[in-house]
Image (cartoon, rainbow, N blue to C red):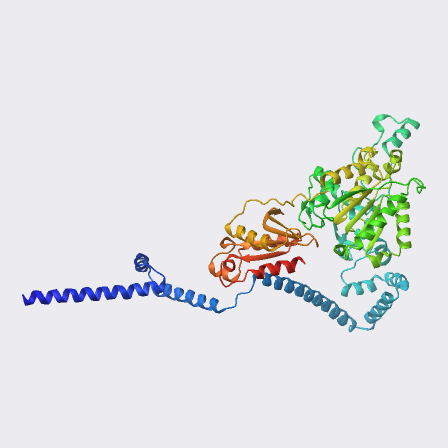
Length: 593
Protein backbone atom coordinates (compact mmCIF):
# COMPACT_ATOMS: atom_id res chain seq x y z
CA UNK A 1 0.00 0.00 0.00
CA UNK A 2 2.79 2.40 0.95
CA UNK A 3 4.64 1.47 -2.26
CA UNK A 4 1.58 2.28 -4.34
CA UNK A 5 1.16 5.64 -2.57
CA UNK A 6 4.80 6.48 -3.29
CA UNK A 7 4.29 5.66 -6.98
CA UNK A 8 1.13 7.75 -7.05
CA UNK A 9 2.81 10.87 -5.62
CA UNK A 10 5.85 10.42 -7.86
CA UNK A 11 3.56 10.18 -10.92
CA UNK A 12 1.78 13.47 -10.12
CA UNK A 13 5.06 15.19 -9.27
CA UNK A 14 6.44 14.20 -12.69
CA UNK A 15 3.20 15.32 -14.35
CA UNK A 16 3.44 18.75 -12.68
CA UNK A 17 7.06 19.01 -13.82
CA UNK A 18 5.99 18.19 -17.40
CA UNK A 19 3.23 20.83 -17.27
CA UNK A 20 5.69 23.37 -15.90
CA UNK A 21 8.10 22.55 -18.71
CA UNK A 22 5.24 22.93 -21.23
CA UNK A 23 4.32 26.32 -19.81
CA UNK A 24 7.97 27.40 -19.94
CA UNK A 25 8.29 26.07 -23.48
CA UNK A 26 5.10 27.82 -24.63
CA UNK A 27 6.36 31.06 -23.11
CA UNK A 28 9.62 30.72 -25.04
CA UNK A 29 7.71 29.84 -28.21
CA UNK A 30 5.43 32.85 -27.80
CA UNK A 31 8.44 35.13 -27.38
CA UNK A 32 9.91 33.62 -30.55
CA UNK A 33 6.66 33.98 -32.47
CA UNK A 34 6.25 30.21 -32.98
CA UNK A 35 3.45 27.75 -32.32
CA UNK A 36 4.09 24.23 -31.00
CA UNK A 37 3.52 22.55 -34.41
CA UNK A 38 5.92 25.05 -35.99
CA UNK A 39 8.46 24.23 -33.30
CA UNK A 40 8.26 20.51 -34.05
CA UNK A 41 8.61 21.23 -37.78
CA UNK A 42 11.77 23.25 -37.06
CA UNK A 43 13.05 20.43 -34.84
CA UNK A 44 12.53 18.01 -37.70
CA UNK A 45 14.30 20.32 -40.14
CA UNK A 46 17.19 20.75 -37.71
CA UNK A 47 17.61 17.02 -37.49
CA UNK A 48 18.03 16.99 -41.30
CA UNK A 49 20.64 19.79 -41.28
CA UNK A 50 24.21 18.60 -41.05
CA UNK A 51 25.74 21.84 -39.72
CA UNK A 52 23.14 23.43 -37.46
CA UNK A 53 25.60 25.93 -35.98
CA UNK A 54 25.93 27.79 -39.32
CA UNK A 55 22.15 27.97 -39.66
CA UNK A 56 21.88 29.27 -36.10
CA UNK A 57 24.51 31.95 -36.82
CA UNK A 58 22.58 33.15 -39.88
CA UNK A 59 19.32 33.28 -37.90
CA UNK A 60 20.99 35.31 -35.17
CA UNK A 61 22.51 37.62 -37.83
CA UNK A 62 19.04 38.26 -39.34
CA UNK A 63 17.69 39.13 -35.88
CA UNK A 64 20.64 41.48 -35.34
CA UNK A 65 20.07 43.22 -38.72
CA UNK A 66 16.35 43.63 -37.95
CA UNK A 67 17.19 45.29 -34.64
CA UNK A 68 19.68 47.64 -36.37
CA UNK A 69 17.12 48.57 -39.03
CA UNK A 70 14.53 49.35 -36.39
CA UNK A 71 16.99 51.77 -34.78
CA UNK A 72 17.72 53.47 -38.12
CA UNK A 73 15.79 56.56 -39.24
CA UNK A 74 13.92 55.56 -42.41
CA UNK A 75 13.92 58.35 -45.03
CA UNK A 76 10.86 59.40 -46.98
CA UNK A 77 11.14 57.75 -50.46
CA UNK A 78 10.19 61.08 -52.07
CA UNK A 79 13.09 62.80 -50.28
CA UNK A 80 15.40 59.99 -51.41
CA UNK A 81 14.27 60.48 -55.02
CA UNK A 82 14.90 64.22 -54.76
CA UNK A 83 18.34 63.62 -53.23
CA UNK A 84 19.22 61.22 -56.07
CA UNK A 85 18.27 63.86 -58.67
CA UNK A 86 20.45 66.44 -56.92
CA UNK A 87 23.29 63.92 -56.71
CA UNK A 88 22.98 63.18 -60.45
CA UNK A 89 23.10 66.89 -61.29
CA UNK A 90 26.17 67.32 -59.06
CA UNK A 91 27.77 64.28 -60.72
CA UNK A 92 27.26 65.81 -64.18
CA UNK A 93 28.79 69.10 -63.03
CA UNK A 94 31.79 67.23 -61.62
CA UNK A 95 32.25 65.30 -64.86
CA UNK A 96 32.19 68.56 -66.85
CA UNK A 97 34.74 70.03 -64.48
CA UNK A 98 36.86 66.88 -64.74
CA UNK A 99 36.87 67.05 -68.56
CA UNK A 100 37.71 70.75 -68.45
CA UNK A 101 40.63 69.98 -66.14
CA UNK A 102 41.90 67.33 -68.59
CA UNK A 103 41.83 69.84 -71.45
CA UNK A 104 43.48 72.54 -69.34
CA UNK A 105 46.18 70.13 -68.23
CA UNK A 106 46.88 69.02 -71.81
CA UNK A 107 47.15 72.65 -72.93
CA UNK A 108 49.54 73.37 -70.06
CA UNK A 109 51.66 70.32 -70.87
CA UNK A 110 51.85 71.29 -74.54
CA UNK A 111 52.60 74.86 -73.58
CA UNK A 112 55.71 73.69 -71.73
CA UNK A 113 57.02 71.66 -74.67
CA UNK A 114 58.65 74.56 -76.43
CA UNK A 115 58.39 78.01 -78.01
CA UNK A 116 56.78 76.71 -81.25
CA UNK A 117 53.78 75.29 -79.38
CA UNK A 118 53.50 78.40 -77.22
CA UNK A 119 53.55 80.54 -80.35
CA UNK A 120 50.61 78.60 -81.85
CA UNK A 121 48.63 78.83 -78.59
CA UNK A 122 49.20 82.58 -78.35
CA UNK A 123 48.05 83.04 -81.95
CA UNK A 124 44.93 81.00 -81.23
CA UNK A 125 44.04 82.92 -78.08
CA UNK A 126 44.38 86.23 -79.93
CA UNK A 127 42.33 84.90 -82.86
CA UNK A 128 39.48 83.75 -80.65
CA UNK A 129 39.46 87.02 -78.73
CA UNK A 130 39.18 89.00 -82.00
CA UNK A 131 36.79 87.12 -84.25
CA UNK A 132 37.43 89.37 -87.28
CA UNK A 133 41.06 88.30 -87.32
CA UNK A 134 40.32 84.61 -86.67
CA UNK A 135 39.95 83.63 -90.33
CA UNK A 136 43.26 85.26 -91.28
CA UNK A 137 45.01 83.50 -88.41
CA UNK A 138 43.58 80.12 -89.39
CA UNK A 139 44.46 80.75 -93.04
CA UNK A 140 48.09 81.23 -92.02
CA UNK A 141 48.02 78.17 -89.75
CA UNK A 142 46.38 76.04 -92.43
CA UNK A 143 49.26 76.64 -94.86
CA UNK A 144 51.38 74.50 -92.55
CA UNK A 145 49.31 71.41 -91.51
CA UNK A 146 51.84 70.58 -88.78
CA UNK A 147 50.83 73.76 -86.97
CA UNK A 148 47.20 72.70 -87.11
CA UNK A 149 48.02 69.18 -85.89
CA UNK A 150 49.68 70.84 -82.91
CA UNK A 151 46.38 72.53 -82.10
CA UNK A 152 44.43 69.29 -82.55
CA UNK A 153 46.68 67.51 -80.09
CA UNK A 154 45.10 69.40 -77.19
CA UNK A 155 41.74 70.40 -78.75
CA UNK A 156 40.53 67.06 -80.19
CA UNK A 157 36.86 67.99 -80.79
CA UNK A 158 35.85 70.75 -83.22
CA UNK A 159 32.27 71.95 -83.72
CA UNK A 160 31.66 74.16 -86.73
CA UNK A 161 29.59 74.77 -89.83
CA UNK A 162 30.69 73.11 -93.06
CA UNK A 163 31.71 76.43 -94.63
CA UNK A 164 34.04 77.07 -91.70
CA UNK A 165 35.41 73.52 -91.85
CA UNK A 166 36.39 73.98 -95.50
CA UNK A 167 37.95 77.37 -94.80
CA UNK A 168 39.75 76.61 -91.52
CA UNK A 169 40.83 72.95 -91.64
CA UNK A 170 43.77 71.82 -93.79
CA UNK A 171 42.68 69.74 -96.78
CA UNK A 172 44.49 66.65 -95.57
CA UNK A 173 42.96 63.14 -95.53
CA UNK A 174 42.04 61.49 -92.24
CA UNK A 175 43.19 64.20 -89.84
CA UNK A 176 40.08 63.46 -87.74
CA UNK A 177 38.96 60.01 -86.59
CA UNK A 178 35.28 60.84 -87.04
CA UNK A 179 33.14 63.48 -88.67
CA UNK A 180 29.55 63.72 -87.43
CA UNK A 181 27.00 65.48 -89.64
CA UNK A 182 24.02 66.87 -87.76
CA UNK A 183 20.87 67.68 -89.81
CA UNK A 184 22.49 65.68 -92.62
CA UNK A 185 19.21 65.65 -94.58
CA UNK A 186 19.92 69.32 -95.31
CA UNK A 187 23.56 68.84 -96.28
CA UNK A 188 24.22 68.50 -100.00
CA UNK A 189 26.98 66.45 -101.58
CA UNK A 190 29.23 69.40 -102.49
CA UNK A 191 29.35 70.60 -98.87
CA UNK A 192 29.67 67.13 -97.33
CA UNK A 193 32.50 65.54 -99.32
CA UNK A 194 35.32 67.93 -98.23
CA UNK A 195 34.50 67.28 -94.56
CA UNK A 196 34.32 63.52 -95.15
CA UNK A 197 37.73 63.65 -96.90
CA UNK A 198 39.26 65.06 -93.70
CA UNK A 199 38.01 62.15 -91.54
CA UNK A 200 38.53 58.38 -91.38
CA UNK A 201 34.87 57.57 -90.58
CA UNK A 202 31.57 59.40 -90.96
CA UNK A 203 28.35 59.38 -88.91
CA UNK A 204 25.20 60.90 -90.42
CA UNK A 205 22.46 62.13 -88.08
CA UNK A 206 19.28 63.35 -89.72
CA UNK A 207 15.63 62.86 -90.56
CA UNK A 208 14.84 61.98 -94.17
CA UNK A 209 11.20 63.00 -93.58
CA UNK A 210 12.14 66.61 -92.80
CA UNK A 211 13.39 69.39 -95.05
CA UNK A 212 15.98 68.51 -97.67
CA UNK A 213 18.61 70.69 -99.25
CA UNK A 214 17.00 72.65 -102.09
CA UNK A 215 20.11 74.41 -103.40
CA UNK A 216 20.47 71.69 -106.05
CA UNK A 217 17.53 71.73 -108.44
CA UNK A 218 16.39 68.77 -110.52
CA UNK A 219 14.47 68.91 -113.78
CA UNK A 220 10.81 67.91 -113.44
CA UNK A 221 9.33 65.13 -115.59
CA UNK A 222 7.40 67.80 -117.49
CA UNK A 223 10.61 69.65 -118.37
CA UNK A 224 12.29 66.38 -119.40
CA UNK A 225 9.35 65.54 -121.68
CA UNK A 226 9.63 68.93 -123.38
CA UNK A 227 13.36 68.43 -123.93
CA UNK A 228 12.79 64.93 -125.33
CA UNK A 229 10.16 66.25 -127.72
CA UNK A 230 12.33 69.18 -128.81
CA UNK A 231 15.35 67.00 -129.56
CA UNK A 232 13.33 63.94 -130.70
CA UNK A 233 14.73 61.58 -128.06
CA UNK A 234 13.22 58.07 -128.30
CA UNK A 235 11.25 56.83 -125.25
CA UNK A 236 13.74 54.05 -124.49
CA UNK A 237 16.57 56.61 -124.18
CA UNK A 238 14.74 59.04 -121.96
CA UNK A 239 15.81 59.26 -118.30
CA UNK A 240 13.12 60.27 -115.85
CA UNK A 241 13.08 60.10 -112.04
CA UNK A 242 10.33 57.90 -110.66
CA UNK A 243 11.53 57.86 -107.07
CA UNK A 244 12.68 60.54 -104.69
CA UNK A 245 15.90 62.18 -105.95
CA UNK A 246 19.20 62.03 -104.10
CA UNK A 247 19.45 65.43 -102.46
CA UNK A 248 21.70 65.04 -99.41
CA UNK A 249 24.55 63.04 -97.93
CA UNK A 250 21.92 61.25 -95.84
CA UNK A 251 20.31 60.01 -99.09
CA UNK A 252 23.70 58.80 -100.29
CA UNK A 253 24.34 56.96 -97.03
CA UNK A 254 20.94 55.25 -97.25
CA UNK A 255 21.34 54.30 -100.93
CA UNK A 256 24.81 52.89 -100.23
CA UNK A 257 23.39 50.64 -97.51
CA UNK A 258 25.28 52.11 -94.58
CA UNK A 259 24.52 50.62 -91.16
CA UNK A 260 21.37 52.35 -89.92
CA UNK A 261 19.94 52.94 -86.44
CA UNK A 262 16.41 54.35 -86.29
CA UNK A 263 15.72 56.60 -83.30
CA UNK A 264 11.98 56.27 -82.73
CA UNK A 265 11.49 57.67 -79.23
CA UNK A 266 9.94 61.15 -79.34
CA UNK A 267 10.49 63.39 -76.32
CA UNK A 268 9.57 66.88 -77.52
CA UNK A 269 5.78 66.93 -77.33
CA UNK A 270 2.70 64.87 -76.37
CA UNK A 271 1.06 62.54 -78.89
CA UNK A 272 -1.61 65.08 -79.90
CA UNK A 273 1.01 67.61 -81.06
CA UNK A 274 3.23 65.16 -82.94
CA UNK A 275 0.31 63.03 -84.17
CA UNK A 276 -0.05 64.80 -87.55
CA UNK A 277 3.58 64.13 -88.49
CA UNK A 278 3.33 60.59 -87.15
CA UNK A 279 0.23 59.87 -89.24
CA UNK A 280 1.32 61.35 -92.57
CA UNK A 281 5.13 61.13 -92.61
CA UNK A 282 6.51 58.49 -90.23
CA UNK A 283 3.92 55.74 -89.93
CA UNK A 284 3.55 55.24 -93.73
CA UNK A 285 7.34 54.66 -93.92
CA UNK A 286 7.29 52.12 -91.07
CA UNK A 287 9.01 54.59 -88.71
CA UNK A 288 6.12 55.37 -86.36
CA UNK A 289 7.33 57.46 -83.43
CA UNK A 290 7.00 56.17 -79.86
CA UNK A 291 5.80 59.21 -77.91
CA UNK A 292 7.27 59.39 -74.40
CA UNK A 293 6.15 62.91 -73.51
CA UNK A 294 2.98 63.43 -71.47
CA UNK A 295 3.66 66.98 -70.33
CA UNK A 296 0.32 68.74 -70.88
CA UNK A 297 -0.60 72.41 -70.56
CA UNK A 298 -4.21 72.81 -71.79
CA UNK A 299 -5.31 76.23 -73.02
CA UNK A 300 -7.62 77.90 -70.49
CA UNK A 301 -10.62 75.64 -69.73
CA UNK A 302 -10.72 74.04 -73.19
CA UNK A 303 -8.84 70.86 -72.23
CA UNK A 304 -7.12 71.36 -75.62
CA UNK A 305 -3.48 71.74 -76.64
CA UNK A 306 -4.27 72.61 -80.28
CA UNK A 307 -6.65 75.52 -80.97
CA UNK A 308 -8.08 77.07 -84.14
CA UNK A 309 -8.70 80.83 -83.92
CA UNK A 310 -11.06 82.08 -86.62
CA UNK A 311 -10.18 85.60 -87.83
CA UNK A 312 -12.65 87.93 -89.50
CA UNK A 313 -10.81 89.69 -92.31
CA UNK A 314 -11.26 93.43 -92.76
CA UNK A 315 -10.85 93.69 -96.53
CA UNK A 316 -10.24 97.44 -96.29
CA UNK A 317 -6.96 96.73 -94.48
CA UNK A 318 -5.67 94.04 -96.86
CA UNK A 319 -3.21 95.09 -99.57
CA UNK A 320 -1.32 91.90 -100.58
CA UNK A 321 -1.96 88.20 -101.14
CA UNK A 322 1.18 87.40 -99.11
CA UNK A 323 0.22 89.56 -96.12
CA UNK A 324 -2.86 89.13 -93.92
CA UNK A 325 -3.12 92.27 -91.77
CA UNK A 326 -6.19 91.04 -89.86
CA UNK A 327 -4.41 87.83 -88.84
CA UNK A 328 -1.28 89.73 -87.79
CA UNK A 329 -3.28 92.07 -85.56
CA UNK A 330 -5.20 89.15 -84.03
CA UNK A 331 -1.90 87.37 -83.28
CA UNK A 332 -0.47 90.47 -81.60
CA UNK A 333 -3.57 90.73 -79.40
CA UNK A 334 -3.35 87.02 -78.53
CA UNK A 335 0.37 87.37 -77.70
CA UNK A 336 -0.48 90.14 -75.21
CA UNK A 337 -3.07 87.83 -73.64
CA UNK A 338 -0.54 85.02 -73.19
CA UNK A 339 2.05 87.35 -71.67
CA UNK A 340 -0.46 88.59 -69.11
CA UNK A 341 -1.13 85.01 -67.92
CA UNK A 342 1.23 83.78 -65.18
CA UNK A 343 1.26 80.29 -66.67
CA UNK A 344 3.01 81.60 -69.78
CA UNK A 345 5.48 84.00 -68.14
CA UNK A 346 8.49 81.75 -68.76
CA UNK A 347 7.22 80.00 -71.87
CA UNK A 348 8.95 80.47 -75.22
CA UNK A 349 6.73 81.40 -78.17
CA UNK A 350 7.29 80.88 -81.89
CA UNK A 351 5.22 82.70 -84.54
CA UNK A 352 5.49 81.04 -87.96
CA UNK A 353 4.23 81.70 -91.46
CA UNK A 354 4.91 80.15 -94.87
CA UNK A 355 5.37 83.65 -96.34
CA UNK A 356 8.38 85.95 -95.86
CA UNK A 357 6.23 89.04 -96.33
CA UNK A 358 3.85 87.99 -93.51
CA UNK A 359 6.77 87.26 -91.17
CA UNK A 360 8.28 90.69 -91.92
CA UNK A 361 4.94 92.39 -91.29
CA UNK A 362 4.53 90.56 -87.97
CA UNK A 363 8.03 91.60 -86.87
CA UNK A 364 7.24 95.19 -87.74
CA UNK A 365 3.98 95.45 -85.75
CA UNK A 366 5.50 93.59 -82.76
CA UNK A 367 8.45 95.98 -82.63
CA UNK A 368 6.13 98.98 -82.93
CA UNK A 369 4.17 97.54 -79.98
CA UNK A 370 7.38 97.62 -77.92
CA UNK A 371 8.27 93.90 -77.99
CA UNK A 372 11.78 92.55 -78.53
CA UNK A 373 12.46 88.91 -79.44
CA UNK A 374 15.23 88.21 -76.92
CA UNK A 375 13.69 90.23 -74.10
CA UNK A 376 10.15 88.84 -74.47
CA UNK A 377 11.19 85.25 -75.34
CA UNK A 378 9.59 84.92 -78.77
CA UNK A 379 10.71 84.39 -82.36
CA UNK A 380 9.00 85.28 -85.63
CA UNK A 381 10.08 83.44 -88.76
CA UNK A 382 9.25 81.34 -91.78
CA UNK A 383 9.34 77.56 -91.94
CA UNK A 384 12.75 77.44 -93.63
CA UNK A 385 15.37 78.05 -90.97
CA UNK A 386 13.56 76.53 -87.97
CA UNK A 387 14.52 72.87 -88.49
CA UNK A 388 16.02 71.66 -85.21
CA UNK A 389 14.39 74.53 -83.32
CA UNK A 390 11.46 74.18 -80.89
CA UNK A 391 9.24 76.40 -78.73
CA UNK A 392 6.75 75.85 -75.91
CA UNK A 393 3.98 77.60 -77.85
CA UNK A 394 3.74 77.81 -81.65
CA UNK A 395 1.39 80.28 -83.35
CA UNK A 396 0.69 79.85 -87.07
CA UNK A 397 -0.39 82.58 -89.45
CA UNK A 398 -1.77 80.88 -92.57
CA UNK A 399 -2.51 84.15 -94.48
CA UNK A 400 -4.88 82.63 -97.06
CA UNK A 401 -8.37 84.19 -96.90
CA UNK A 402 -9.75 83.60 -100.41
CA UNK A 403 -9.97 80.28 -102.32
CA UNK A 404 -8.27 81.82 -105.36
CA UNK A 405 -5.09 82.28 -103.27
CA UNK A 406 -4.47 78.53 -103.48
CA UNK A 407 -1.84 79.02 -106.20
CA UNK A 408 0.24 81.04 -103.72
CA UNK A 409 0.45 78.01 -101.45
CA UNK A 410 1.08 75.21 -103.96
CA UNK A 411 4.82 76.05 -104.43
CA UNK A 412 5.25 76.20 -100.63
CA UNK A 413 2.98 73.49 -99.24
CA UNK A 414 1.33 71.71 -102.14
CA UNK A 415 0.53 68.00 -101.77
CA UNK A 416 1.20 67.00 -105.37
CA UNK A 417 3.46 68.23 -108.16
CA UNK A 418 6.63 66.67 -109.53
CA UNK A 419 8.88 64.49 -107.42
CA UNK A 420 11.21 67.30 -106.37
CA UNK A 421 8.40 69.64 -105.33
CA UNK A 422 6.46 66.97 -103.46
CA UNK A 423 9.53 65.92 -101.45
CA UNK A 424 10.46 69.49 -100.46
CA UNK A 425 6.87 70.36 -99.53
CA UNK A 426 6.44 67.25 -97.38
CA UNK A 427 9.65 68.01 -95.49
CA UNK A 428 8.68 71.65 -95.08
CA UNK A 429 5.22 70.74 -93.71
CA UNK A 430 6.60 68.07 -91.36
CA UNK A 431 9.06 70.58 -89.87
CA UNK A 432 6.42 73.31 -89.64
CA UNK A 433 3.92 71.23 -87.68
CA UNK A 434 6.28 69.49 -85.24
CA UNK A 435 7.99 72.42 -83.44
CA UNK A 436 5.70 72.84 -80.42
CA UNK A 437 6.32 71.38 -76.97
CA UNK A 438 3.06 72.38 -75.24
CA UNK A 439 0.51 74.13 -77.48
CA UNK A 440 -0.22 75.18 -81.05
CA UNK A 441 -2.58 77.99 -82.12
CA UNK A 442 -3.76 78.29 -85.72
CA UNK A 443 -4.99 81.67 -86.93
CA UNK A 444 -7.25 81.04 -89.92
CA UNK A 445 -9.14 83.58 -92.02
CA UNK A 446 -11.58 81.26 -93.77
CA UNK A 447 -13.63 78.19 -92.79
CA UNK A 448 -11.75 74.89 -93.14
CA UNK A 449 -14.39 73.58 -95.55
CA UNK A 450 -13.70 76.45 -97.96
CA UNK A 451 -9.92 75.97 -98.02
CA UNK A 452 -9.08 74.35 -101.38
CA UNK A 453 -7.90 70.77 -101.54
CA UNK A 454 -4.35 70.06 -102.62
CA UNK A 455 -2.52 72.06 -99.94
CA UNK A 456 -1.26 70.54 -96.71
CA UNK A 457 -2.72 73.20 -94.40
CA UNK A 458 -6.25 71.89 -94.97
CA UNK A 459 -5.24 68.41 -93.78
CA UNK A 460 -3.46 69.92 -90.80
CA UNK A 461 -6.40 72.10 -89.76
CA UNK A 462 -8.75 69.11 -90.05
CA UNK A 463 -6.37 67.17 -87.81
CA UNK A 464 -6.26 70.02 -85.24
CA UNK A 465 -10.06 70.26 -85.24
CA UNK A 466 -10.47 66.52 -84.64
CA UNK A 467 -7.49 65.82 -82.34
CA UNK A 468 -6.79 69.01 -80.39
CA UNK A 469 -8.43 67.77 -77.21
CA UNK A 470 -6.37 65.84 -74.66
CA UNK A 471 -7.81 62.36 -74.83
CA UNK A 472 -6.41 60.86 -71.62
CA UNK A 473 -8.00 63.45 -69.31
CA UNK A 474 -11.27 62.08 -67.96
CA UNK A 475 -13.26 62.83 -64.83
CA UNK A 476 -14.66 59.30 -64.82
CA UNK A 477 -12.84 57.00 -62.41
CA UNK A 478 -11.60 53.57 -63.45
CA UNK A 479 -11.73 50.50 -61.17
CA UNK A 480 -9.22 50.66 -58.34
CA UNK A 481 -6.46 48.05 -58.12
CA UNK A 482 -6.57 47.91 -54.32
CA UNK A 483 -8.37 49.06 -51.20
CA UNK A 484 -5.36 51.30 -50.53
CA UNK A 485 -5.97 53.23 -53.78
CA UNK A 486 -9.67 53.59 -52.99
CA UNK A 487 -8.93 54.95 -49.50
CA UNK A 488 -6.36 57.38 -50.88
CA UNK A 489 -8.81 58.69 -53.50
CA UNK A 490 -11.51 59.33 -50.87
CA UNK A 491 -8.97 61.11 -48.67
CA UNK A 492 -7.54 63.34 -51.42
CA UNK A 493 -10.90 64.09 -53.03
CA UNK A 494 -12.31 65.18 -49.66
CA UNK A 495 -9.40 67.56 -49.05
CA UNK A 496 -8.69 69.11 -52.46
CA UNK A 497 -11.14 71.61 -54.06
CA UNK A 498 -12.71 69.87 -57.07
CA UNK A 499 -12.70 73.07 -59.15
CA UNK A 500 -8.96 73.59 -58.73
CA UNK A 501 -7.67 70.02 -58.93
CA UNK A 502 -8.36 67.26 -61.43
CA UNK A 503 -7.86 63.72 -60.09
CA UNK A 504 -7.53 60.76 -62.47
CA UNK A 505 -6.63 57.15 -61.83
CA UNK A 506 -5.10 54.33 -63.88
CA UNK A 507 -3.65 56.82 -66.38
CA UNK A 508 -1.74 55.20 -69.26
CA UNK A 509 1.62 56.63 -70.31
CA UNK A 510 4.60 55.13 -72.18
CA UNK A 511 3.02 51.69 -72.00
CA UNK A 512 2.58 51.83 -68.20
CA UNK A 513 -0.27 52.71 -65.87
CA UNK A 514 0.06 55.37 -63.18
CA UNK A 515 -2.08 54.94 -60.03
CA UNK A 516 -3.17 58.61 -59.88
CA UNK A 517 -2.50 61.81 -61.78
CA UNK A 518 -3.38 65.02 -59.96
CA UNK A 519 -3.48 68.25 -61.99
CA UNK A 520 -3.68 71.82 -60.76
CA UNK A 521 -6.09 73.29 -63.31
CA UNK A 522 -4.97 76.83 -62.49
CA UNK A 523 -1.21 76.33 -62.92
CA UNK A 524 -1.27 73.42 -65.36
CA UNK A 525 1.19 71.45 -63.18
CA UNK A 526 0.53 67.77 -62.63
CA UNK A 527 2.17 64.91 -60.71
CA UNK A 528 2.03 61.13 -60.74
CA UNK A 529 1.04 59.60 -57.38
CA UNK A 530 1.90 55.96 -56.68
CA UNK A 531 0.25 54.01 -53.85
CA UNK A 532 2.99 51.50 -53.05
CA UNK A 533 1.61 48.29 -51.59
CA UNK A 534 3.65 45.18 -50.65
CA UNK A 535 4.02 44.13 -54.33
CA UNK A 536 6.39 47.06 -54.91
CA UNK A 537 8.99 45.54 -52.52
CA UNK A 538 10.79 42.20 -52.15
CA UNK A 539 10.10 41.83 -48.44
CA UNK A 540 9.15 43.71 -45.28
CA UNK A 541 12.71 44.87 -44.60
CA UNK A 542 13.10 46.46 -48.06
CA UNK A 543 9.64 48.00 -47.72
CA UNK A 544 10.72 49.63 -44.45
CA UNK A 545 13.83 51.00 -46.20
CA UNK A 546 11.92 52.13 -49.30
CA UNK A 547 13.93 49.79 -51.57
CA UNK A 548 11.73 49.13 -54.62
CA UNK A 549 11.89 46.15 -56.94
CA UNK A 550 14.08 46.72 -60.00
CA UNK A 551 11.19 46.75 -62.53
CA UNK A 552 9.48 49.52 -60.57
CA UNK A 553 12.65 51.63 -60.57
CA UNK A 554 13.08 51.24 -64.36
CA UNK A 555 9.41 52.10 -64.90
CA UNK A 556 9.76 55.33 -62.91
CA UNK A 557 12.96 56.26 -64.79
CA UNK A 558 11.19 55.90 -68.16
CA UNK A 559 8.21 57.95 -67.00
CA UNK A 560 10.43 60.65 -65.47
CA UNK A 561 12.27 60.89 -68.81
CA UNK A 562 8.85 61.54 -70.37
CA UNK A 563 8.29 64.49 -68.03
CA UNK A 564 6.43 62.94 -65.10
CA UNK A 565 7.17 64.04 -61.53
CA UNK A 566 6.48 61.35 -58.92
CA UNK A 567 5.12 61.31 -55.39
CA UNK A 568 5.08 57.91 -53.63
CA UNK A 569 3.08 56.76 -50.58
CA UNK A 570 4.00 53.58 -48.73
CA UNK A 571 1.18 51.38 -47.44
CA UNK A 572 3.09 50.79 -44.19
CA UNK A 573 2.95 54.56 -43.55
CA UNK A 574 -0.70 54.79 -44.60
CA UNK A 575 -1.87 52.22 -42.00
CA UNK A 576 0.45 53.46 -39.25
CA UNK A 577 -1.71 55.03 -36.52
CA UNK A 578 1.07 57.48 -35.67
CA UNK A 579 1.44 58.69 -39.28
CA UNK A 580 -0.12 62.09 -40.03
CA UNK A 581 -1.81 61.81 -43.44
CA UNK A 582 -2.06 65.59 -43.72
CA UNK A 583 1.66 65.55 -44.58
CA UNK A 584 0.73 63.85 -47.88
CA UNK A 585 -1.83 66.55 -48.62
CA UNK A 586 0.63 69.36 -47.83
CA UNK A 587 3.35 67.78 -50.00
CA UNK A 588 1.02 67.37 -53.01
CA UNK A 589 -0.30 70.94 -52.79
CA UNK A 590 3.27 72.25 -52.55
CA UNK A 591 4.38 70.24 -55.60
CA UNK A 592 1.42 71.49 -57.65
CA UNK A 593 1.64 75.17 -56.70
